[in-house]
Length: 97
Ligand SMILES: [Zn+2]
Image 1 (cartoon, rainbow, N blue to C red):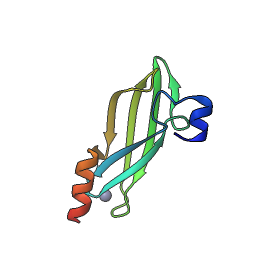
Image 2: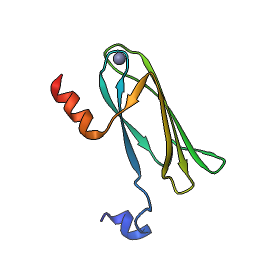
Image 3: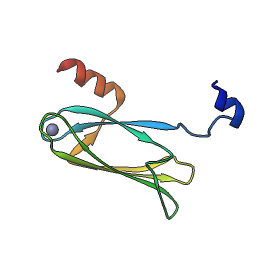
Image 4: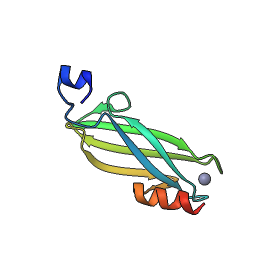
C-alpha cells in the first residue's frame, strides 16, 4: 500500500485498465492504457469511453466504445476495425510474431 492509499483509502476501482485489441486488417495485437478517471466521460446511467487506436503495422484506425455503469464496471464493448482480445491472447500473438 502506497502513501496516498493510506492517506485516502484504497480506490473502489482500478485506476487504470488495459485494452487488448487486434487489428482486423493485419492482425497486429496491441495494448492501450485507459485512465479510469480521466479517459471516461459521463453519460446517462454511467460513463463512456471512446478511444481511437492505430497499430504500428498497417496504421488502420480502430475505434473502441466501451460503456460503464456508475460504478465504472464494464457494461458493453464495441470495437470498429478490430477485435478485443484477452491479455493471454495478446501475449500469445506477440510471442508468435
Ligand atoms: Zn493493422
